[in-house]
Image (cartoon, rainbow, N blue to C red; front, side, top):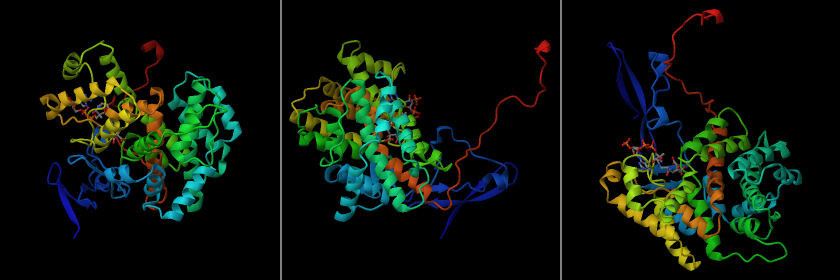
Length: 427
Ligand code: SDX
């Protein structure tokens, strides 16, 4: 039996609002008819209480620290899956069977290279340019070399477009890195899997064979899986917003890259390393820093979350992974001990407890990425590669939705009321 809620407005006006109940028993007021029947709109800056859509892709319970992709708990995927398999499942809704996985992997291998014209486009980007700027512009540039991707008319056409984007985003990132360090690009190798090929394109030396460390490949798979989707976060909402206008997959995901760049979102993994580095260098002490956080002169980067008011399950997995992988790689990173000290202090301090501030995905990810050789200026690019399947899945959900409409929020105007134009000699 459908539920409804009653809204009582000024005077005796009331309106019944249908209640939408999700598969995990989330409840929402459907205000689709609010303005037309009452003249009222709702207002919710930063959308902390507003659902933009109903989606089948990702579920988060922030109070209990639950994260599932298409119903699969993130802990099981991080333990058992690969990034390529998780990407398929996020996009098409089910874990692939052997044949489906082989076909999907084959498409990713086939579409790993860039058009030679695009390869030379890197020469026009300054080496000191930010890799997120290069990533966003090159993703759009890919569609200029593959105009057939701009108008997807079939599921098969979408699958090729998705494979091209997911595969080439890795090549673009590696080429962009090689350009910043003045190294010759390394073309993808068809016999390498997704993560091994990325590491090869990033770090292999010309005229020498590339033997990836299995622990590094496994850690990279896990990093990408943990970043693959996160329901309506800022960048995914951006992809859906842009896609709602009918913009193509590449333009929508290039916009997602720009949203992710911000230090409050995907850029936080870099900000965490900067924060830990300042403490390690002695510019400030843990105690002094935490005092500054509580007096709001500093933020504890990598802590806090709009949805998680409990541990971000990804942070727990990354912390355990860092503790396991660093010793295996023979890496001693003093920043890990500082991160642990900050975490322990925060978890016992009333300031953080009452604000429900816990480590989020960015708190430990940078330490693990640094240990496997990823340069700090590429951390947010790594987040974007990991998040690409989620963006593609959400774009496709909008694309396939017969009831999808262009996203166009309203506002409450608070500017000047009507007034006449003042001639220059009267101003
Ligand atoms: C990601 O949305 C997603 O799902 C994102 C993401 C994904 O996978 O896509 O999970 C990835 O972006 C993770 C978040 C990475 N960003 C950071 O680590 C930056 C540091 N965190 C904060 O900036 C903040 O916690 C946000 C941006 C993450 C969330 O901000 P909110 O929900 O707007 O929270 P808020 O600013 O309203 O904070 C509530 C209170 C405030 O104190 P009071 O005004 O009540 O006294 O908590 C305080 C804030 O000052 N607070 C912090 C803090 N985060 C919030 N205080 C110190 N350090 C922090 N990090």
